[in-house]
Amino acid sequence: MPLTFFSSLLLLSPRSYYFFVTMETITLKNGVVVEVDDKSRVLTGTLYLIHLEISMVVDLSEEDQELRRYCGGNRLRKTRVLKRQAVHAAEVDEVAQRIKESFLSTNLKYMNHPKFVERFKSFSLREFKEQEEEDRRLRELQEHDRDP
Image (tube, rainbow, N blue to C red):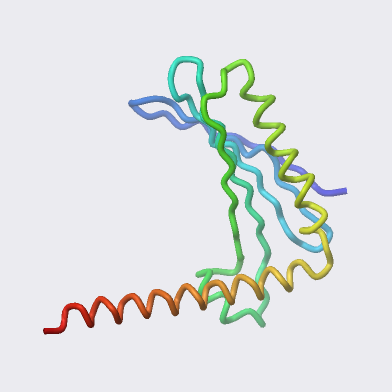
C-alpha cells in the first residue's frame, strides 16, 4: 500500500488569493514518489481555475552522475500540469478530485512497473541531451546571424 501525506499552505497577494495544497504524496514500491499539488485559484467571483501539478520524483544514485549534472541535484523530477478553467466554486473540490483520479488511474500502473525508474532516467537523460544540443545549434545560428 502506498504511503500518503497531506499538507497545505495559504499564499496571499494583493490581486487575489492562491490556495496551494499538496493533495497527497504517494510512495510506490519501486521508489518513485508521486506528488499531487493543487494550485487552483479564483478567476473571478465564484469561478475558479483548477490547476493540478503531478510530479514524478526519483532519487539519483552515484551511478547517475551525468543525470545529476542536468538535474542540479540528487533527485529527478518531471511535472505534468493539468488545468480546467471556469469551474464554479461549488464544484471545485469534486472536479479537482476527478482530474487527479483520472490521471492516477491511467498512470500509476505504468509508474509502478519495476523497470520504470531505469526507463525514466534513460528517457530523461536523452531528453536533456537533445535539449542541450538544440540550444547549442540555436546559439550557433544566432552567432552566425550576428557575423558580418
